[in-house]
Length: 391
Ligand SMILES: Cc1cc2nc3c(=O)[nH]c(=O)nc-3n(C[C@H](O)[C@H](O)[C@H](O)COP(=O)(O)OP(=O)(O)OC[C@H]3O[C@@H](n4cnc5c(N)ncnc54)[C@H](O)[C@@H]3O)c2cc1C
Image 1: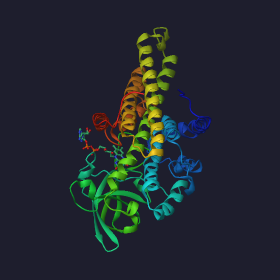
Image 2: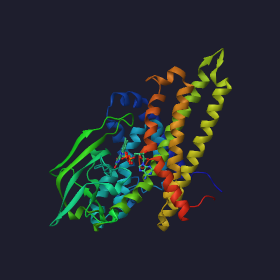
Image 3: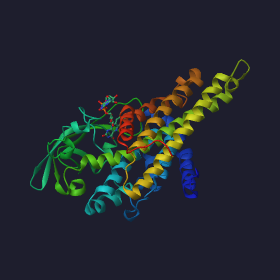
Image 4: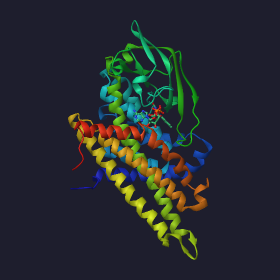
């Protein structure tokens, strides 16, 4: 059994680390507090080809294996989780277009999305439906060779930069509801389309998260993802699977940053004439965190490598991705809080990184399906016999 990354993956991780050390970490705290958009970092990510992570090579993408994909989110989130968010829904939507789009849709969108010349996102959630996606209210009514789309989407990350924006809609109202659901690749320049407001957030700053209004937007039938109605839910669920891997990897990055900060502080801070790292109470926290972070990392790489294996056979990895996302995000929550405790009062200061990690960590327990929902997904896989525990 070989737990090593390949030489290529190691070299890629080193490139990412150098980028994070040099171009993200020095500005993250200041830009995050001021709410500044990380435009220069986004420009560098374009140069590095990171917007093409999930785009096939024939369209100019990197076509990264899923372990390298996870490494990308882990390393960037170690520097600033919000910046990982710039790539997150973009990569998921590129993957969906590559996997499910028609030839014409792939040719039309993927080359620009791979370079970041255009970017994308994903619009599923609505004010009245998040977990229960079959309960969405956005309707697309056929009108000749167009659909007329009406509805409101909320919590849409990267909405102001998305062109096209894949939007989950109901093209017909049927039972079961998922049979009437489709994804439309909406042109943001269309009449009736607006990004109505940026939502104020606890953390996950840097990237914008918005409400989007579609008021009678005319969308050509050629923008129906895959060209066949009724496949939207299936297309989205496949995308969310790799989305959960990216959330798991981001959680590992945030947890690692919290641990690194705790270890560094514990070595330097003295109390009662010795570094606080000498106190057993602090040592126990460090040992717990190091152990749990390494377990989260292994689970995430394992799920990613299962996804690579699944890509070859078409097998889904909902259970594996759900386990990684669930476990790693709980570890990130714990790590950010325990690191704050190690820092004492300074952990509560905006001059130390821990407070940002503490504000960023909860998103990973919510986004791409809440952790309670992940637990249900895992349980269903086990009970149905599709998922197994063991090696
Ligand atoms: C910062 C941020 C960025 C986001 N970015 C995007 C984005 O880019 N695109 C997008 O489409 N969405 C995005 N989301 C939305 C996110 O995916 C949803 O918030 C999430 O899926 C939960 O949906 P909800 O908020 O409607 O909660 P609800 O579905 O209302 O859930 C509320 C509670 O009920 C529980 N619950 C619901 N159903 C069940 C069930 N069947 N069994 C047990 N418990 C249940 C949940 O676990 C949760 O505890 C983002 C959210 C945030 C906070």
